[in-house]
Length: 248
Image 1 (spheres, rainbow, N blue to C red):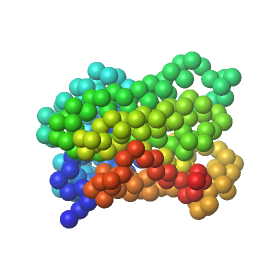
Image 2: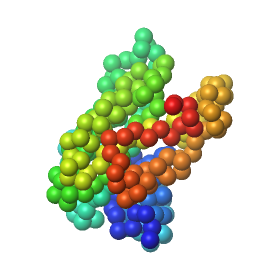
Image 3: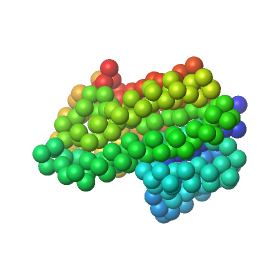
Image 4: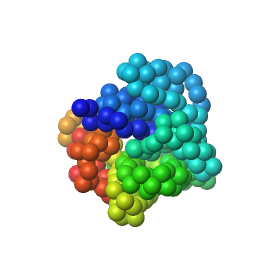
């Protein structure tokens, strides 16, 4: 039996990068997959088609997780379409990197809204459903910079650190209803976002990683499968670093 057989997952920001890898891995492991992006584009359509080719149900939704109203509507719609949600992966996120002296208030507010407020919106929206079914796994995508900080990323680091505090708090609130809440903290992962990093900076990052390589989106997706499956039935309130040892 596949690890996620008969489970339904909802993944935000899944049209590309880590979110897309998680969606595909979940489907391979037997889950039906609902996922979101800001707009329905070719990436959304191709992901939906790829999952359906595996024989699993899939549907992409245009939704902004940073909007409380859209989060509420999304959960209601997905429940109507899929009948249940067993796993929620809060993956949507952005960066607006800059030194604090050059960072605008708009860039601070936007990163906090998309990366942190969205977690509140989605978790609150799905809480009633999971409490009623007395089961659920919520997986929040943090970052190693939410643990260690990083120059030029004070807004991003703050959002990801806040996410960790939220994860640990909600795990204590709803654990008695058999709902688990955990976070994944990726390190240097090869995505479209990290490909924009200058080569000199990339080399410096890799030099500091004990495993001497960047991670892949599959490395992160494998941990998401573990946290979404019954293999982690006694794991909640935890942050799992996927970073090749750069943060220990």
